Image (tube, rainbow, N blue to C red):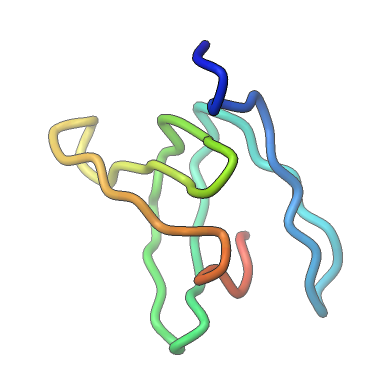
Length: 71
C-alpha cells in the first residue's frame, strides 16, 4: 500500500455513517443527482475512491467532495 492509499473510508451525511473498504460493492450517489450502481471499490486514497463496474477493465475515480452518499 502506498502512502496515499487507505484501507477504509467512512462517509457521514444525512443518512448516517457508512464505511467502505476495498472489495466492497456499493452504489455511489453524486452531489449533482447522478449515481452509479454495482461499483466495486478497487482503491481508496486520501482524496478519492477508485471503482469499477466491469470486473476491473475500466477503473474510474470520484473525489470524496463529489460524493453525496454511498449505499
